Image (cartoon, rainbow, N blue to C red; front, side):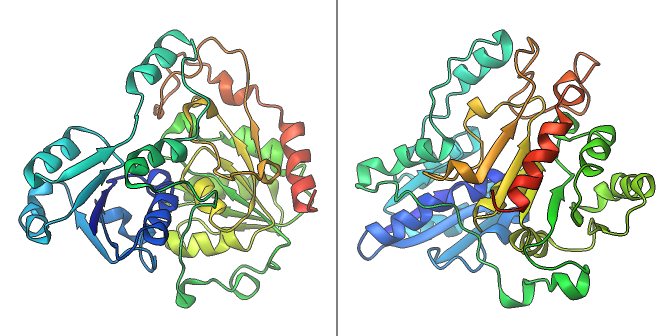
Length: 331
């Protein structure tokens, strides 16, 4: 059987499809797995032993549709479910399955504040797309396979001991998901352990602000210095990851890293919290409850629609710092 899995974006969403990929490969006989994603997210799937071929597009399925037709797939598993994937399935003309995306329920939740979402993680909803193939959730975590050349020597390159530092993911695609500088300063000054700041080039200004304000030699700025996969290696070697609701949070679950997550405008009830089946002690969630304006979006905004950003500024920094310390010590 030849199967095409489709998920175009983004970091966390692609990572969260990997349990489905693994289960298809391990539970079906003589199966060949192909995966279609955007070129910028190919790196998340490289070296995955459960994938036989990765297909990518820059912006249009027209870039690959001719070659995909030649593959004569038996089944298309649509884990994105949008107009583009609908067009793809129509053009391929093959048997296909998708998952309950629950867009209307999400819309109701965001617009009215009434939670009508089922208490089901998005990974479990992804598995609905393969249920008719007889494939079941194996109850294991997500996966990211790093090459030896991508493993960072944190002692030599960052001056920290593996398993003895807190990694902080300070970036996120949307500003309303990001912990502001004032919040991060209050948290970090309460963490008496080495801290490594991770993020991209766009996060370097924030990292510099944090270092300049806190003036601690054990705060290491790793933003903009490493690829995503190299940053994943740093997260892998940390004792705990303090993170926004962002891609590195999901990458951390691939390596069993303890997670302290801080949520702004988005909420865990949307089903995208850390995927640690049967291991809830490995992660914690910090959020400001009972805000009538939250969630204000299922993804995020570049500015708070209300102008006050209470979902972050009202966070309990003491509780977050204590949580980080406990996880650093293995509790």
